[in-house]
Length: 86
Image (cartoon, rainbow, N blue to C red):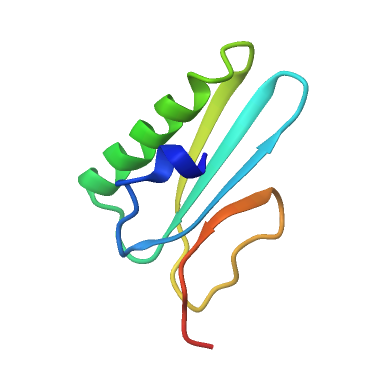
């Protein structure tokens, strides 16, 4: 997933996470502020590139607004986290 994120990380992206079970991969993109069409397209591009490596799985993409300073959910494996003020 890190490779799929290359060139697609915008300043508003707070975190990207992945989780999976036997059938489905879930990708989570957490954005700070309103999610622009460009941000949405970028997340979908990352998802498409990522799932191409795992054709045996279904894919669910979750593009969510989660404004700072709300905490990023614990579920899933963190693959990107922007530096934020504490």
